[in-house]
Image 1 (tube, rainbow, N blue to C red):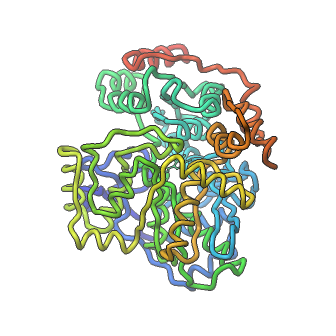
Image 2: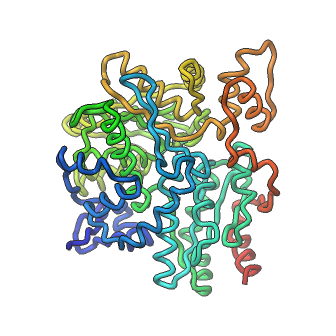
Image 3: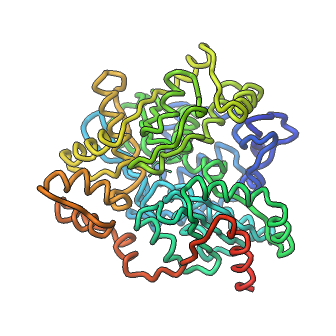
Length: 501
Ligand SMILES: *Cc1c(COP(=O)(O)O)cnc(C)c1O
């Protein structure tokens, strides 16, 4: 059997390709690109029907086999045990009907209540296994605005041959998100608050990755650096699976006929989630449109509507959907590669780096729009959408509400027929905004001071209850209390390593 190799989005020379394991352990690809699929196998409708009696784990094993990832089946089975800790151990990604033509895919039923768990849970186990096999310790650095950090810590806590350092902007996350990190007790995890915003945390991480003194000090202790951010192809492959799962679930429940096309609306930031759907489409899953839903940082929806990706005149705006507050959306690069090839991708990325912009020509834009549609909404529309969702009996978080807004709007305009929108976080993770949308409007005068009050207020107002993963956080001790300047990070990490040994 041929095992697949992954190539760089900026240099498709097969001599530079890497197998799956090496691509996920050392994720920086030649020419500053990203490892990606060169080609994808195409399934027929009959092939897709034949997947319909599989469990989620079996579906993943089967699709990875079709993708020739070359993974040992016993290992993969073991890694997929992680889904047993999700709300329904037999269904980590349940689909819920809003009406005959609109469905919600719930991707937040894992331990940290955001969709990051869907891929980071198995990915963490896989990476740790590969590290143990090589007897090489890896340090995973993560910078987070709130969801990636908790999911990374949860995934790697107490895993052998792995150390995690997680940087977050102090005061820049919700109480729930902070507690999910600062209450982490595992001795292989270090959480550091930074004086500054998410960009400062992200820049600090980038400068560490390029800091030769830091890298050499780690080498002396036999530690290599790696990254678990959403450009790692090891995360993307797990994000293909649930799109197949959603389609098959609807088919089995007679909500669609065989081969009938469905559109998927994704609240997008770094473009990893929707990239999984794009790959599923290229593998033959009957998807009509892939819809990018953005917030006011609408760089992605502008790009898909105009062909111009231009960050040169933009500043990042703070919104109520912080996981989508992003301007440089990394995974777009993999779509450029799939549609236009390595040479053109490199050209666009170089232009983005030097001028802050690149522009597709008319034909390229037309090709992009065969697969993608896009729209955005502001915070007011987002909160209205949460209220509208509640009228239908659902409590949505701000990110999911943006996807819901997009699906409704495009269906009303006749641009979409049957549609799935992705729900990427539980309401409990963004309680103050949900409170504002559902509870405040009902009060003559109302303020809510923190996440805890908001959570309780929402429960009193709706039928919702706080999941144990969130409610127990408030009783745990915050054991990771470092808050420091970006310049102090290196010495803080070294100090931590010394204390461990
Ligand atoms: C990370 C995240 C997103 C954005 O996903 P991308 O894969 O980066 O596009 C959307 N919603 C929530 C709640 C998230 O945590």
